Every structure is written in structure tokens, then in C-alpha cells.
Length: 485
Image 1 (tube, rainbow, N blue to C red):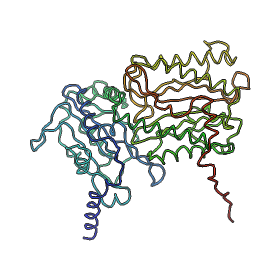
Image 2: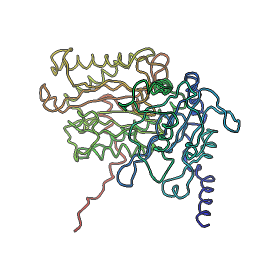
Image 3: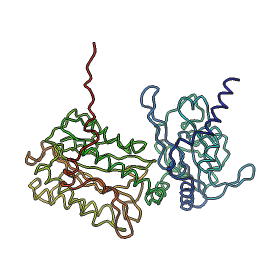
Image 4: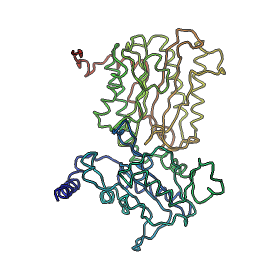
């Protein structure tokens, strides 16, 4: 009786107070509904698209990583919890009670004891009321959900990876939902070499759904653009504050911490990807995320590639600055080549231009610059001083879904040329250890672009001037920690 009373009180308190202390600028339920309709319009005749929430990832022992929803699932529903499945039908279906519907979602049920430990849940009622998904049910109902998937010409979904844990205490967790779905659709893994192609040739389509999602997510709505601009502005302000606060002797991790403190100060939920803070030769590691160097030297550059995630949308901004506050002539020479390459690509941005074309423009400028400095012998020489492409979409993913063959209006993407000269490279040692990447975020317009990240200084002159400004952290000095015996 006591437990039952606690349950009633807890669930009631959630209904009354749970939403009052949350931010109000999440994507609206109308946005998600419209996105589902746009997908429905793309689906082939007599088909159903099936989406699963992201799995819970274990960090160690009984501690999990902070949960992050599958971007497609978030985009279509706004639902941020695990252990859920969404079905979107091309055509109206009829339920057992005669009600017509064209989408249905199964979510984790309310559970007072679990919510006391791991946080509030929407449940089926909350999902209906707050997210506008009228056909919302507890995930315990999915196994009993009576739909004949064989009647559809196509059942569209992303194939599964063997990375979902089974929670024996929860018979309707994501693992169970997937297993129940496999039974319902007569699924056989494409990796099962004992299953012939003819046996797998049924109505299951594991390939086309991604193309539909790329077409949708690649073009941003005004509601999305507002969140992306906020994420980018926060990330730019982080770069500015670090430029003001940076001093020789700081650690890479301390510098990372300043960036991420600024993100949190502006209410960003997370980073969009592991933060990259590489001093000196560490900057030559493209995805250097250890950030372990205990002291940065005044002789080095530091490459800082960080992006705030705000309401699910991530920025991706990189600046490379001199730890001393002033670029050396050699550092400036490399930096200015990268900046020139970026600006050459920016001039080419307009609808119809491909990412490959922008990339080639940056490579041409970089190769000419490296040849002029004597680092390479010919503009046609193969080298690894610029080993990556210059552009990718940003949005719900840092490398967001979208087509790369032709820019369209309201795409959001990066332009990020770089030069990296590791120790022992085949060039004059004066260049060794110099790594420069300049990465900015853009929105394509009808005739050109909107420079989303222009708040963060880009030229050597502007960076040096910003680094002379006082920082609110100048007097933030912590005492030394002494080991006590």
C-alpha cells in the first residue's frame, strides 16, 4: 500500500511540475510532425519505415554513458529517451477498434522506482500530450502489436549492429524490441553467410531509408537554423574567451575546460563531439582527443577544434592560435596559406557547387603555398600535409546527413582547410610541428552564404589583438594541491 501511494504521488508530481523547469526552446512538436509528414511523402507506395532509439551505452560496471538519442529518432519525434520504436506508414492503417492512423510509437513506460534513480519518463501519455504522437503506447505493448508486415511492399529500416545489450530485468528494452521486430518481419541478418540471397529477397529494404533522411536533414528549416546559430555563437564565444585567457604553461585539458565551461554557461547540453585541443605537434593528429599535455610551450601553436551541442544541434569551429600571443613568421606563413585557401572556397559557395569543387579549390591554394615555401617541390606532388576534405554538413550530427554533390539553399556545412607538418617530415625542420586548421560554419543562401561563425577572430591580426584583451579568468588561481600523508 505504501509503495503504491509513493508511485501515485510521484507520477502525479511529474505531471504537475516536470515540465516547468525545462528550457522552452526545444524544437516544437509541430516541427517533428511536419518532418514525419515530409518523410511519409517520400516513402514508396504501400510501405512502412521503422526507426529505433539509440541503445544505452555502458561506461563501466554499473555506470552508463550519458544517453544520447539517435539523431533520426530525435528529428522525427523529439523523444529523448531510450527503448523506443517508431513506425511511419505511407498509408493509413486501421486499428482493432476501427481507428485510422498512419504512425505509431512505443516508449518506455512510467516507473516510479526507476524514475527515482534515473530520471523522469514521459510515458505514453506524456508522449501524446507533449510530443503530439497520438498513437503512443508503452513498449511492453510492442510484442503484442498485431500488424502483418508481409502485406507491405517494402519495410524500410536501418540494419542492426550487434552492439545492443540485453537487460534481463526488462523484457521490453531495446534488445527485446529489436528481437520482437525481427520475428515480426522474418529478418535474417545480411551478415549470415548461411542465408542465400534468394532467402533474403523479401520486402525488407535496408538501403533506401538513409537517402530519404539525407534529403530531409540536409536542408535545414528556420526552426533548426535558430538552434544551429545558437550553437555556433556559443562555440565562437568559447574561442574568444580562450584567446583572452590562454597563457603559456596552461595544460591542454585546462584549455579544453575553459571552452566547455563557456558552453555550459550558455546552457549547451553537451559537446557535439570529443573536444580536440592539440598544442604543437599534437595538432598534427587530426582527431587528437587525449588533451593530456600538462604544459603548453610559448613557442607553439595550439589547434582547438570544439563545438557546442545546443538542443541537439552541434557547431564545429576550429581556431589555431599562438600560445605566446604572437605568431612567428613561419607560423604566420603557414596560417595565411590556410586562410587564403578557406577564403578562396568561400567565394565559390552558391547553390549547385559541390563539396568536391570546394575541396579542390582549397587543395590548389594549399599546394601552391607549400611549393612557394619550398615544403613541396611541385604543386602536383603527393603529400599528407593536407590529408582531409574541406567540407561536411553540420546539424544533429557533427558530420550530418546530407548530399554532397550540389549545395542547396539552407544547407549548413563547414569549410575547414588545414596544413599539418609532423616531426621528421621531408622538409626543412623549421616547419616541423606546425599544424593549422581554420574551420568555419556556413549556411547556403540563394546566391551565396551566411557566415555563421564570423564572431570568432580568423586573421592573424584579429587573433593577436583578441589575445591582448583581459580575461575574466585572469584572477582565477587555484591553490596547489599537496599530498597529505
